[in-house]
Amino acid sequence: MPLRSLCLSFVSVEDNVAREFRSGFLIIFVLRNRLKMVDFSRVQKELVDCNRDTAISGVSIMLLGNDLSHLSGTITGPVATPYEGGTFKIDIRLPDGYPFEPPKMQFMTKVWHPNISSQNGAICLDILKDQWSPALTLKTALLSLQALLSAPEPDDPQDAVVAQQYLRDYPTFVGTARYWTETFAKRSSIGTEEKKLVEMGFPEGLVRTTLEVVGGDENMALEKLCSG
Image 1 (cartoon, helix red, strand yellow):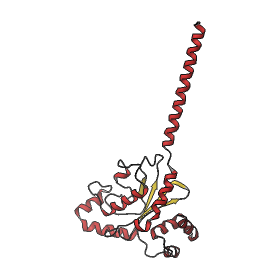
Image 2 (cartoon, one colour):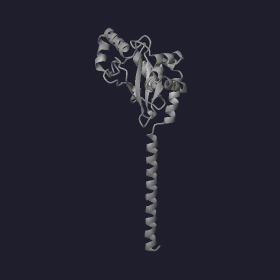
Image 3 (cartoon, helix red, strand yellow):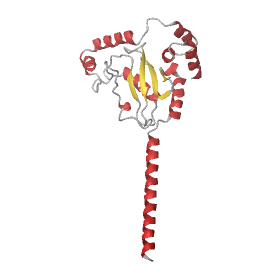
Image 4 (spheres, helix red, strand yellow):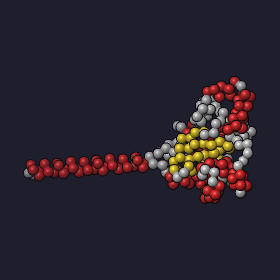
């Protein structure tokens, strides 16, 4: 083969290799970025599933505006605990990798509990960290938070002061937790709009959250509640 033809063949091979390399790199880049995108169809399904039996489960999730990556959850305080009768609001933010990465949750309602910061509502719970699995859901996470209110883990605390009180002076802990529930997680009286919607059969916690999202507009709240 003439030298010139041989050189052209090498150049052609190099060009092909370069093109294939760039193509492969582009595919990897695209796939990696797709994996980092929130699965919004799954989130919508989760919202429907979670709110289907709110009256039984005691947990609910609502949209905050039109952003599916920022949600508001509520859980009712478990019976026979200092949190009974309270409704606790949870801020939920979904990372780009959800459901392969855990949701970020934080109590917006102040609560006195060893595994929840009394200062900023940060939560110490394994499934919101290294024990998260894509098989779990937002409803599962909220139910786990509800269970955490029933069974604190003071040996693995988020709030060391509360944990020490729980371990050393349990009656005082119970009294303080109950006082915080009465002060921050309950309302002394239900609003007129809220009362009307509750009388229609909607769960009080879900009604309250919905009214907060729509700025207290009863008609908009009713539309959201009926749309599921």
